[in-house]
Image (cartoon, rainbow, N blue to C red; front, side, top):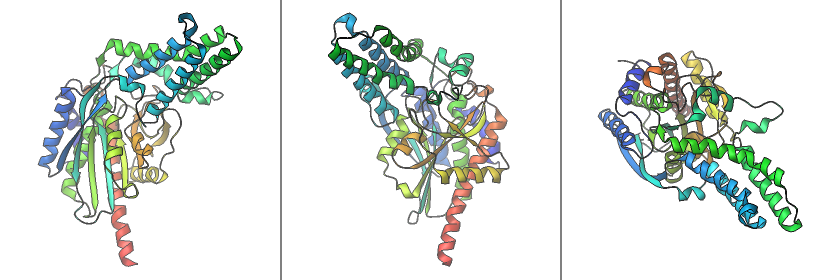
Length: 410
């Protein structure tokens, strides 16, 4: 019997052959999810499709927020009172914050939503539940644009100077600048003083965000997304098939979730985190996202502010790496965006993402680029990442069995 490590690369190529791209809510996304469901049903799993609606374009949302902020900054030129502009900037900041921390959509609700779905493939516990392990991988692929050209991305994603650590979160400065603009506008409204150059300077971060994201919207081009994230999907498939044959304790539930709308803003994971009602004290969540084209890291999530990693999950990963004879994945702080682990963290679950980052590129190689094809995926790293994930699952299952045995002995 071939191991997951041996099967994962052929499975990646199989997935890549099903659809050239897989934007949120498109036929390509559904074709891949349906093929996965059919394959894992043959392995004995129960599959469930959970449809939902979600705005497709995260870059459109960013362009909308910061484009409106620019328009309000120019309020004096078109007759809007300064106090009204200040209220508008605070409202934009509130809307952006709520979206960034995965709580709700405000302005983004103006962007059209599309039909998409999550696919859950489950091996249910046949005894009273003691532990649930949820493995996530997103099916959808991303839009691309000038921002993702390797040379530009290397500059944008590079760690900030030590004296400017707040720049480590790329959208924090534009976010804070909205409050600074509002403060100037309120002061001007009551004092009659104008701050032309200061307003212009504070508008630069918003202008950069608007231009970069509007270009992606205008280009309207999707990428193949082989590394990001057919690698994660392939790993989940071969792990599910392997564990269907190995078996797990009757009181442990395994869930393999193939999410939609991750590239649109972790929409599928957010829907699951809010609606599944899984017991938080009995559920561990791992997102496998881009398992090649770099060095494997555990991600520290957070769009604007850092969200601590669950230390027990980090420890499990380190132990699994030791079991696999591989280096322990280091922590990598996400500079922007988030993975499917983030909504679960927001909702109080223990969750952690495993992702490959090229230290020179400061992102996976070919990240959100048209060259992210199956033939450009590093097969050796994909095999190693899958092997570590397999050992991680084995350790989680074994840990539960050992806990039960210790309890029985006591």
